Image 1 (cartoon, rainbow, N blue to C red):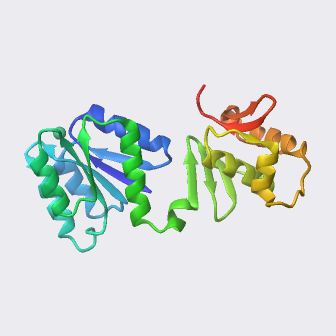
Image 2: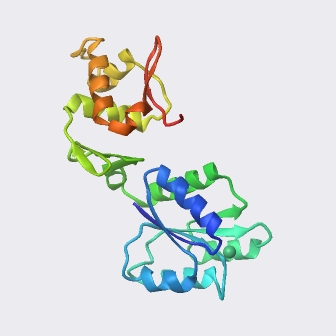
Image 3: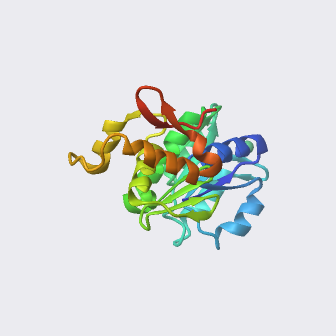
Length: 226
Ligand code: CA
């Protein structure tokens, strides 16, 4: 999923970019309407985060342009508005914006809104095809793991263990719990072999292996906090 941001305050643009990239989204920002307008027609993007107060132009004009362009009008837009610009917010929604965020905003709120809009407009399949976290990419259709863009061979079991852990970041799984998720009620692998799979996975993840943490006496979790 590719997100475009049009926001003239570079700090804010960077902050949004950084946090959405952590969520596995690909992000590019533009600081001026000119830069954005040069690119938006020929580039594919899945969502636009649009500031309304822009140099030389109101974001609403950009919104109008996009909504009047048949090949772009389907692209969801989240507008960024200042607290004292209620009128713009309403107008933006009337013009077809999907959601709005009021500045100053919290990062969590931003991420939640972006994800909600993407979920609404994207069939689940395309959204879930790739899981990207830092340098780890899981291709759920090809069952491929990439570490720093390089393909790494895994067994199906390793792949699924990683998928479960990554999809549920910071959640601690017992070995039993992992097994249940892996095989339903069929206990094909016995308890301890989970440890073997996890150990191999850690090696295969290279610099990111450290995120696959052992929780003493309980099980495993994928946790990127140091
Ligand atoms: Ca602005």
